[in-house]
Length: 207
Image (cartoon, rainbow, N blue to C red):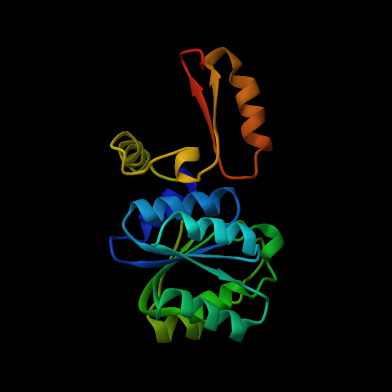
């Protein structure tokens, strides 16, 4: 949760925004969908796995999905249609394997003038992000690695207040709890996990 929250916070996501989340089907992307939803936005979840995207869209009427194909122009139209127009912000979590993906260009083409872009992924090489894209759309681009202490406190408050619910009941995946003395097992489980869900270390033995 902290990884996407840092990026979303840095570009000033606010209620009423339409936010592109790409890719939205992995561990961090699906968390970003839930976070953006809790922040009061219309979320457009983008990816190639139509099945997972459909499940995300079914959770809340403020989530739309856009299944991309690799055809830049076609995908741009798909994303714009899911937005109902143009988007206010774009949160990107491109992994190293997505360096040649066309989704980045398609998402940029679906942004309105003055939109904000958050880069939180790990693409090791250049992406298709031209000077003109930034200039003519008056884009603000912000790179974010993890989150600040203040953002961490804000995220905790969102959970404690119930604004950001967690767990199976909101389709976020299981919450696995480990006792404090089992921290190493919890760490290994978190390292191996790729699907949505939460790993929690608690001072009290889990029931």
